[in-house]
Image 1 (cartoon, rainbow, N blue to C red):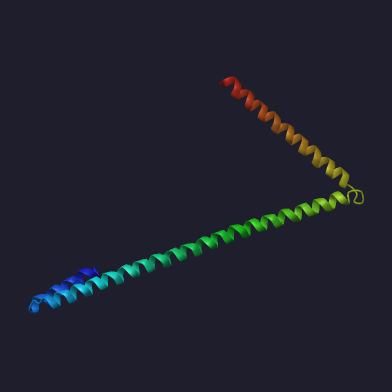
Image 2 (spheres, rainbow, N blue to C red):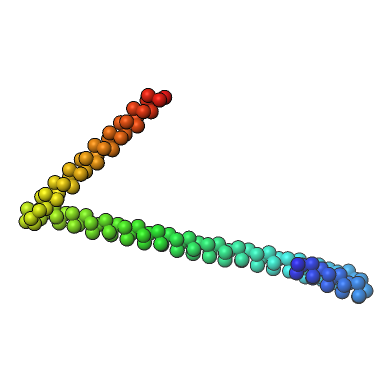
Length: 128
């Protein structure tokens, strides 16, 4: 759009003045220089846009890493409580019963999952 306006202005100037080789070459050199400047500006805009996108991506990565860190810290606190309970299981009443119930539930869940997998594998073999 800007280039078209400049071309029109250059054309109207050349029509109003007597034609000479010097004026035409000056105008063409100015137009070429303007094209180079426009190209440089497009490259600068592209570079700035890439920098902003990189900044946004770093922000997303920071949020992801913060979330992961929060989860790890929560897991670490849970495990530290479990280790504390395990080390002090003889001194706190009812802990042995609680740990026994937890282990029983884990075994039961493991057996259920194993049975379900066996049924699925058997079903795949039979219906193949």
